[in-house]
Image (cartoon, rainbow, N blue to C red; front, top):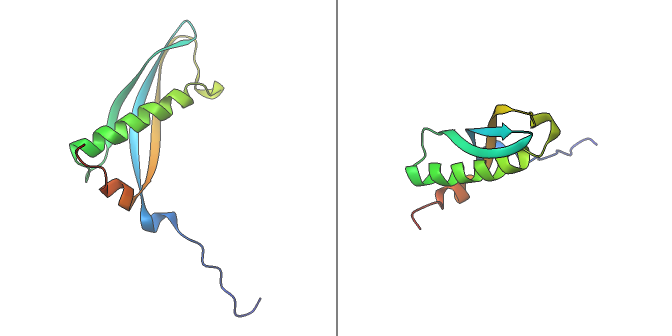
Length: 95
């Protein structure tokens, strides 16, 4: 394989990773509430933070089904990482 190169596409060049924190409240082994605690994004507008927060809550609903995230009673805090293409992120505006 002399003279060939592999051009792997790097996700870092064309996407952003945004971290958000959620809290899943369990009562009697069932999910009572999922709440967004914070979206960590220095360059986001309020509308973009709101859209990322809604996606974090949506993903948190799937995460609460995972046995490693379930607890019988109490609160479970999770960090949710959302990767989004830069052009899709820029398209999040007032609707």
